[in-house]
Each structure stands twice: as structure tokens, then as C-alpha cells.
Length: 75
Image (cartoon, rainbow, N blue to C red):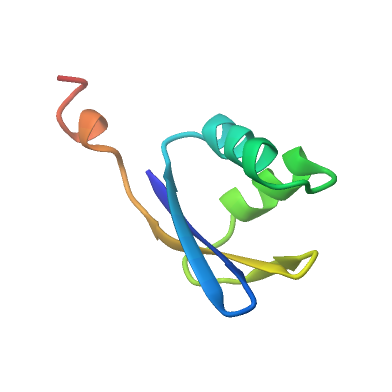
């Protein structure tokens, strides 16, 4: 699971995603960025706390960790 901070005008919104496909869908459904796939890949591969800015929005990874299902062997 990855927690992504999305900040604009000093207002931060944090979202949690299990997969990059979920993140792409979230971006498409909630924002009007051009090049959503490239943006999603760029943000997904950031190091924790490393910022990336596009169109006035700043993205950063709050945390990267394995999901509970993986730790529990899918049970």
C-alpha cells in the first residue's frame, strides 16, 4: 500500500492505493491532468518524502508498505 500526499495551495489530501492501476483511476476520476499514466508512474516511483510538482500540484509519498493481505499470506 502506498499513501500519496497531493498538495495545492497549502491544502493536503492523502490517498491510499494498493496498485498503480488504482492510482491511475483515482487521478482520472478526480483531476484533469494531461499524461495521467506518466504522472502516475512518476509519483508511484518517488522515494518517501521526495516531492514532484505538476500543474501547481505537489505529490509526495507519505509511506510505502506491504499490504496486510501480503503479510498474512493472502488470508
